[in-house]
Amino acid sequence: MFTIEHEFDATVITLVDDGATPLQEDVTVHATESAIILNQYDARLDRTLSITLSPEQWRDLTAALDLPEGVYKAR
Image (cartoon, rainbow, N blue to C red; front, top):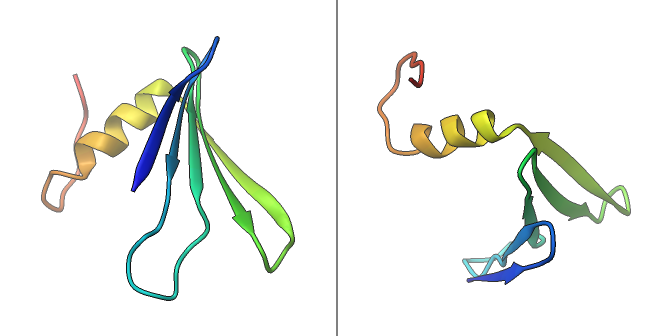
């Protein structure tokens, strides 16, 4: 399950783990013009962890999900 919200300067997607247990914490994706930020709460550390990707890295990641093993360069 996921939600999509359009804010002033970003689109926010929340990914909710509704699969089999053990369930993972929600992941929020904040997409702006200059960065894509992934956040997930870590209960073991009692803090939210964050990863920042450039738009190019995000493009490569989404393309990689549908490709077989190998080395690729996007045009």
